Length: 346
Image (cartoon, rainbow, N blue to C red):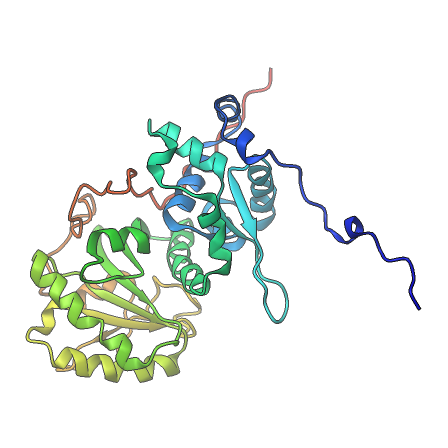
């Protein structure tokens, strides 16, 4: 029996009112945003430009006191078209909201640095198109590795700090003719600094395919004269047990294994009650000549590679092959600015 159907408009959820794309990039509108945006808002815009996509949880843990506070501010930024958002489909439960840079955010970012917005090579369709990317889970996971380090550093009792975070895209621009790491990081703790490339593994490749990346890192070290450790993050200890023998065989076949210091860790390994904390004592260095089962913290890994020269906490990343601004913008600081003080009551 045919009945009167529900009206289409009644099937839609509530969508906040937003500016059109044309209105959101107008000079007058961007100028009006100047009195509304905090330093933290501007920092988040730069982070989304650099790292493409961050989830609500990631943004909350690196820049807000709670998820509720993050949601309230992100809703406002969404209305102003600083950010856009989407929610991927999952087979059970619901995925967190994912945020990308929107047109007004790109315009603000360009104007802050005195650039023509076209110089950023920003395209909204490409930015929101990551929602359909087959690499979305990998990108979000790799970004989550670094946001976990930032969140750890926000703890008042923390002694370490992430001082540099390069995205996969920036690494590709600098080193893509040889290697394509999933990120570059620099960690300062206890008056010492360490740097590393990240290989974020989702167990979608055969172990020998993961190991096949190591000779290219040896080639990069030989070409630049800079030896940078490679950290390989895998989802489970079972996967780690399968990957390590393949890595050891490849390392053993190199002419000089000291060019590629390697350590592995798994997300499900609990280090002193700190699950999924990359700074904890969960890293297992790999040396085919001297196998070890010892787990070290991120700041302790330098002990496993005494041949590496010490880094000064105040020095710049030593992997840089240019001025760091090949995209027109320098990488943003991983540390969020402090909260903006309220205006005094008059």
